[in-house]
Image 1: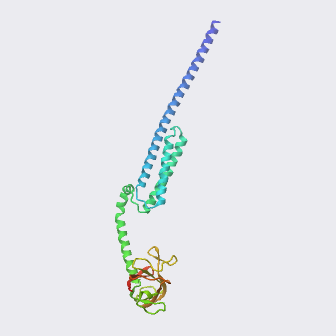
Image 2 (image 1 turned 120 degrees about the vertical axis):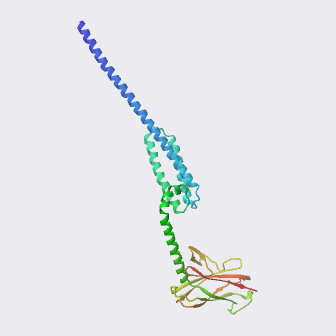
Image 3 (image 1 turned 30 degrees about the vertical axis):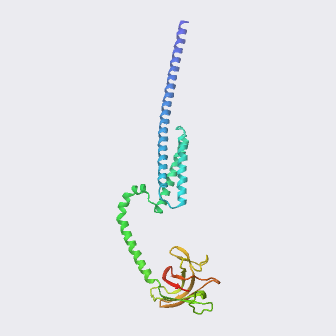
Length: 299
């Protein structure tokens, strides 16, 4: 009986020791996992703080763009929208727990997208020749290395431009003389302003063998003493120096490189009396102003 009790006690002791070892192992594993979890949370907290700093830096970067003199409403609106989006995501990040790995990963991807948008906006700003001090500083080394090449290219461009301007001037038509005649309603000459119904302009284009011959459109703009354009309508438009401007009268002429004598007329509207004073007529052809002459109308 005594042997049986000893055996039972031995079994209990062995089982208890094993249970104690298991409990100790479980506790050790628990504390190790808890320590690992705490370390992971610490790392995610650090990552979250770094991500917040990156969002703050990007917000400041967008704020810097807003301070630039960008004369483009569409680009300014886009900058404002993207800056607001950075601020909204930053607030969302601040309210996100460090343990929410999925959300932090999403916000990190959003940051990468916003950075790409920022780089694209920078390229657009550069294309509009907007001065950006930060980019200038970052690219200073590249600019120094390319300075000589740019200077050479600029010099070559200027030389080509001067050469083209010289060639264009040589090929440009020129009205070398102009005579204005006042006509009444029967197309008879008159010196009385009250009888004036039509202006006749006799002009002479100088000889120019470098000018391309052919059929040409000659436009004229007549300005009154107050600077108003006579005969202006929405339909009477021609292109000059990257703009569409109005003209008073237009006629076609066949130019062959020799001296050309022509005449053009401007008829006043019915029952309209023209005022006295100094007028001016400008002539345009082939995209160039080829003559400008003042004339006076007296009573």
